Image 1 (tube, rainbow, N blue to C red):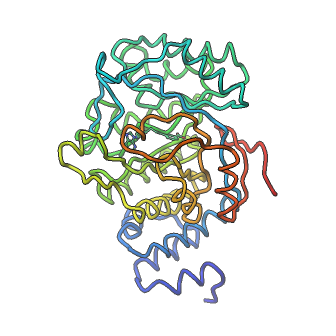
Image 2 (cartoon, helix red, strand yellow):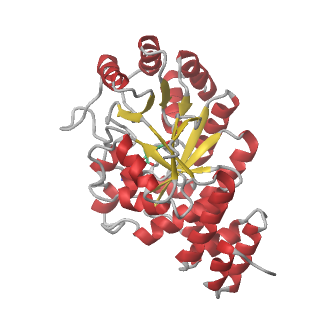
Image 3 (cartoon, rainbow, N blue to C red):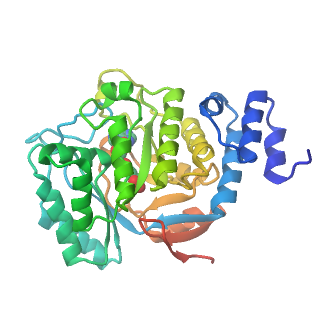
Amino acid sequence: MVRRGTELLLYKYINDSDLKDVIDKSLAGEELDRSDGITLFNTNNLLALGALADELRKRTVGDIVTFALNRHINYTNVCISKCSFCAYYREKGQAGSYTMSIDEILKKVEGSVKKGIKDFHIVGSHHPDLPFEFYEEMVKMIKKKFPEVHIQAFTAAEINYFSEISGLSTKEVLQRLKDAGLGSMPGGGAEILNEELRKKICPNKVSAEGWIKIMKEAHLLGIKSNATMLFGHLESKEDRVDHLLWLRKAQKETNGFQAFIPLPFHPKNTPLLKDGLVSEEGPSGFDILRTIAISRIMLNDYITNIKAYWVMLGEKLAQISLHYGANDLEGTVVEERITKAAGGIAGGMMTEKKLLALIRNAGRIPALRTSVHEILRVYRE
Ligand code: V47
């Protein structure tokens, strides 16, 4: 067979016949299965993974890299879940614990609206005392004062918790939040979709099945969402593949995931590190790029946007990941606490100018998007 371009480059570097078979299958548009995913995770041929992911990215979304002018708000860190991968949570009354009032949240929204930001990503934790009405009121008040903004809020884990504290079904919780003005949902709380592992890393949180069920309910109610995967802690390569397959299956059913965001574990200050269960380095740059590439390869025909979250990747690795399957850089973010608590060092001010430079210097075309991935402006020059 005569091969051209990227395909030729790919084949030049491959001397592993199993990997070659998977690449052939993928380039032919065939759906990859669990054993194909494991083959991808077993290779050290990062260049081949990158070339394949980049080829699929080009075929599916072209050279445009999207970003948002957005603001994250983490409204509380008081949490009863106590996940062992998390350095962010505090007990009620503990030093460093905080809970924003609705007025404080409104002030943050107002400050950003004045700067032209219309997209808000709002997540918190599992607070022991706040009633469901607090969350409903938060969304209602933001929409009342700033009807033009889009609220992407509450992970499926929070929705599950709201259902537990209110006695409402998860579907009723979602419907009430939608009626209050919820626009879409972020992808957090997925961690690793494996019930056994969740007993070790997040025993008090929504189950894997519950997370998927809530996301599908949201999609059927017309609430789009994202999906994440927290990797580089106790999970195996097989667990990562299974996670991607869970998402792919759900997407075939409800088609509501807009973007997938692989989140590299940050170990500092986490119970997992304190208990000596993980090393202090976290996943390597190699592992991060490999996981982003495999996410693109396994999900490409189903979840077309693969987001490089620069806050967790660092700006430079996030930029490189645009050549390993990613096509989105998240956004200006403004304020982020979860990664910082766990030793994340990326940050400072991320500006539109900086995002444009990161994307252009990677040879790609920047485009401003909304939280629901509508393109608002393409920066051709
Ligand atoms: O759900 C918690 C993860 C998530 C750590 O939907 C950690 O567009 C690394 O979900 N090391 C919250 N990760 C962030 C999140 C997110 C971020 C950006 C965009 C979107 C989106 C979603 O952070 C949590 C959890 O999986 N997390 N602790 C840690 N130590």
